[in-house]
Length: 206
Image (cartoon, rainbow, N blue to C red; front, top):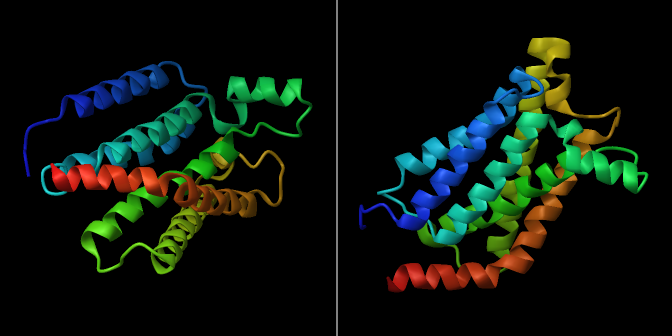
């Protein structure tokens, strides 16, 4: 594997840190900001640590950046108070700010392609229904694990975690979050698999 840092990846890092620095300036709630941004920072650490041993396709790095931006923006404003989605709520008379739904959709959509790449490159699984089933199951497990983390944080910190939970009074918020992750994973495989195959082929040919 070529250990040279790809210029595209440098650009992605610069965008990531630019958005991160912006988000850290006067966030709505510092504790919520930390909780929301933490997964993006963990992802950065993992991708950096594995960069020379297992380099993903450029598609993965781009998708991870999009997911990180969603998390970081949510951390700055809190998911329940993201201004654009407040505007959508007020303009279209919606019952809540739906930015958290976008976040959980991304929680399925983007990990699905990441998991797909790892399984295709490192496991004996080949393209087909079994691969899709395993990917969707893993994405659901990730979503459920995140809900358990939210529950644990809420139990440990009490009302301080209200903005992190972002339920907005919806008793079915946890179920909606997992459904959106499931929907995201399914739509990701349907819409992105062919494109992902092209990136995988380019990586192998290179």
